Length: 157
Ligand code: DLZ
Image (cartoon, rainbow, N blue to C red):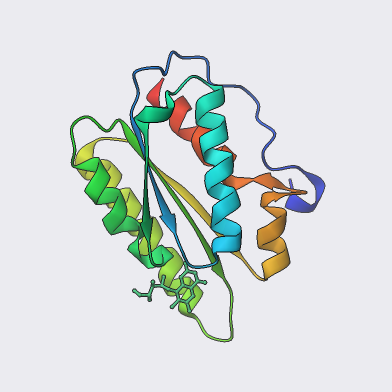
């Protein structure tokens, strides 16, 4: 369904597990922080709502989305971490930089996830403009950070 017709954060099913012992790392890009800040808030709020303890959520900042893969690896290599959420925002510009960053992040996070056998969630907002990003970070299309948190809990079930 086209995103114009749907709040993207409406889920078919909720996470149902007991997540009180789960430890989650969240990597957040500082680039476009007016978007990534609300993504982080949405992710943390959802983790707490479904029972993850606050002191089991650790947040690391990275300068830009390109650095999310390295940040994810820093978390994933620690045995006590159960999974990693990566949050960033890449907005299309006049050049193809967004394609390169988005592809690098998608590939990098996939590699980290498979190497460490843990869920690593792609919470990257990739939009044509700033308004579309606002709409997806607590606006009319929901919050991709919330979606990323729900996704990691479902993957941990
Ligand atoms: C350089 C750059 C540009 C042009 N745009 C974005 C963006 O829209 N979103 C984002 O998260 N990061 C951007 N960056 C920074 C890169 O992700 C990265 O931090 C730098 O290229 C240094 O490796």
